[in-house]
Length: 117
Image 1 (spheres, rainbow, N blue to C red):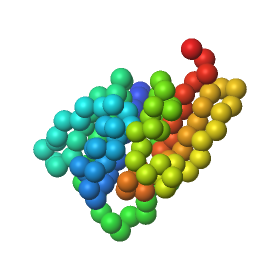
Image 2: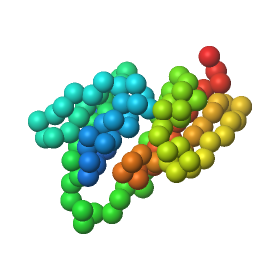
Image 3: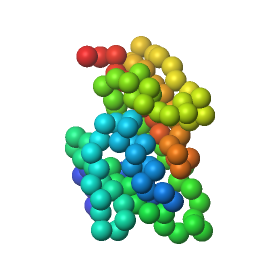
Image 4: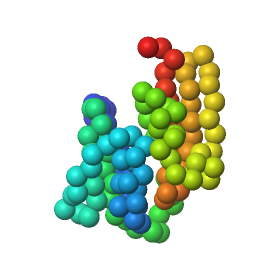
């Protein structure tokens, strides 16, 4: 039996990879490099974020929403253009602040800022 040893990368497929590159670069202050496949990749601490061209369209959309830890959730949200349309919810708990939003391709993602320094 194989065991999970980590997450290699977060792959986000897009009909318009450049549009998603601009969105994630703005929200997370990332520098993306182009890939040979027509996508982009960026290092975010121990995680690689890869944006690739949309694959097969006959498959259902994923139902998993990645949750990203950020140092400043207000700064991340302030970089989202058309915030009224893209931000679904945001709230605060004793553990920290949460926000859920959609990228320009309609993929849901979450942001979390810990209240523990």
